[in-house]
Image 1 (tube, protein in one colour):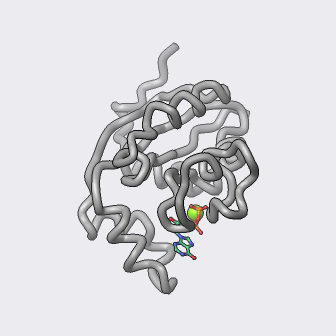
Image 2: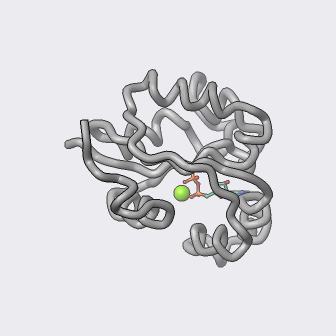
Amino acid sequence: MVQRTLAILKPDCVRKNFTGKVIDQIVNAGFKIVGMKMVTMDAKTAGEFYAVHKERPFYKSLVEFMSSGRCIPLVLEKERAIEDFRELIGATDPAEAESGTVRKLYAESKQDNIVHGSDSQENAVTEIHFFFSERELIPNS
Ligand code: IDP
Ligand code: MG
């Protein structure tokens, strides 16, 4: 089934100029980019995006990190996009990520881990709409 997932190139990715390399890896893995923008989230917005983690000890630091600079939300389309993108990026902690994954290649810590990927169909829909309106995602060729 063709699915859509939400990716975010996080502020560390943009700051370190890995944007081009990571997008190249995403496209080479067969994902079609159907939405892309650059945003800077304030703390309130970053906190809302990660609200599911608000009781976790790393939440405050995560919100500071995610609102520390520009990031790039992407809507990606592919067969099994959600699962395949999680595989492409690797484990949350780069020390545990498989070789060749985005996080293994570029991430420096469990928090500063370069990229976000939706973890379920339901969350993908919610997260896509967090950043993109329907009219920005009109299906085309
Ligand atoms: P995921 O991004 O692989 O889905 P989640 O558990 O959903 O990982 O956590 C969301 C984000 O919170 C991670 O990508 C990472 O930036 C940060 N994070 C998760 N666990 C930790 C931790 O133990 N310490 C610091 N930051 C963390
Ligand atoms: Mg997650």
